[in-house]
Image 1 (cartoon, rainbow, N blue to C red):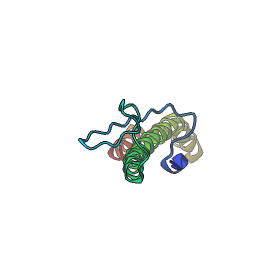
Image 2 (image 1 turned 30 degrees about the vertical axis):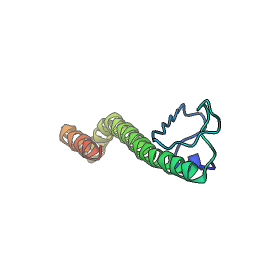
Image 3 (image 1 turned 45 degrees about the vertical axis):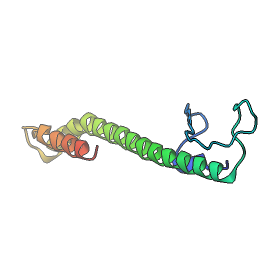
Length: 116
């Protein structure tokens, strides 16, 4: 059919199955046994359009999934290094009390959840 799957962010190693069904009273068959559908350009065109529509929805789903994973890693990175940055900054400033970073972490997590 000639569909560029990489455009839809579907890589060759991604396990995907697409099943189609044609339902009509006028389905053109190749044989009398109704085992094979005839090669008609309009059927191929409609199947290709349907597969591309499904692929667009898959691209949106995969993009959203990747963005959520990226945000989760970003928030984990903030949570890991922000306490150390706060501690060293406090020492450099010559202060004794380390600032409370929990409100900042909560706002970063809340901002990351809004994008989901």
